[in-house]
Image (cartoon, rainbow, N blue to C red; front, side, top):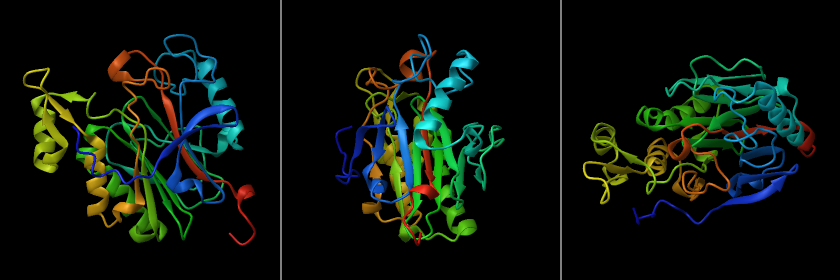
Length: 278
C-alpha cells in the first residue's frame, strides 16, 4: 500500500532511556514531565522465545522473569510498580479513567486515561496498535490498545472523547501518537475482516497480490481517519512507520512468531520532572 499521505513528517525516534532502547514520539518529547515510549525486545532477562525484555505476563514466560523485566523498566523511568496502571486488554472498546496505579489490571478495559500526576499508563503489544494521547493544556494523558476489533469499534476516538468528557480536555489541544505496530504490507486478513473495514474505511483495504482471496489492512490509516473525524487536527497526529512484524531485531510479533513476548507502550506525567508552575 504505497499511499502514505496520512503521514505528516513527524517521527518516532529510537533512543536509549534508562539503559533501554525505546521508541519515542517526537510530538510529545518536547513536553516537560511527560514520560512516554515504546519498548523493544532488548534489555531484559527472559529466555527464548521471549528474549529478552518480555513485559507480558500472559504469554507463559516465567513470572519471575517478567517481574524482573518490569521492575527494571519502571525503575529506569522513575516509577514504582504501585504507580503503574494496566488494562486487561480484551480487544474491546472500554475506556477506563484511572487516578492511581494498581498491580491488578482494569477488568474489561483496552484503554486508560488519567489527569493524575505520577501515574504511568502501560499496555502490552506484539503487533496491535498503541495510540497515545496528551493534552497540552491539562497535561492529561491516555493510551489505547487497538487491534482490528478495537479499531472497528472506534476505540481511539472513544479514548479522546472520554478525555474530553471526564477530564476536561479538548480535541484541539490534544496530540496523538500512533505507535510501532504491524504495517499494512505485513497484515493480511480474510474477507470477513476486510469486509468490516471496506465499509468503514475503504482506502485502508487492498487485495493481496500474493494470496488469493486475502487483503492487506492498514489499521494505522483507519485510526488516523477516526481521530480526525473526532475533531483532531491532522498535523497533531503522529504515525509511526515501524513494522513490528518485519523488524525481528527490535520487536516481538505475534503474527510472525506465534509464541513470543510483548513490548510495553507507556505514558505518564512525572511530577518530579515538571518545572515550577506546572
